[in-house]
Image 1 (cartoon, rainbow, N blue to C red):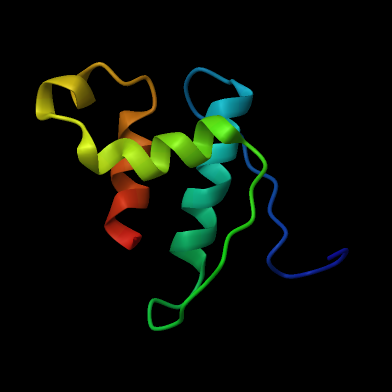
Image 2: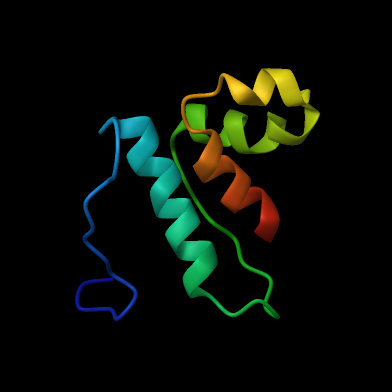
Length: 79
């Protein structure tokens, strides 16, 4: 919503891709919202959806080669 305190504009650190930007937005939303509340995050990036949902099924070796591993690790702590 226009003018909301939750609107953020930040620089994406590292390789600046749309996929990384989408994952960073999810990460920021989860870190900003209260931990004791259930939330729904609506996102239209199939890459982000698949990456978040499938992250826990990957082996340690597979995770080491993910481009956005550090962001996915942070997101996984909240879900």
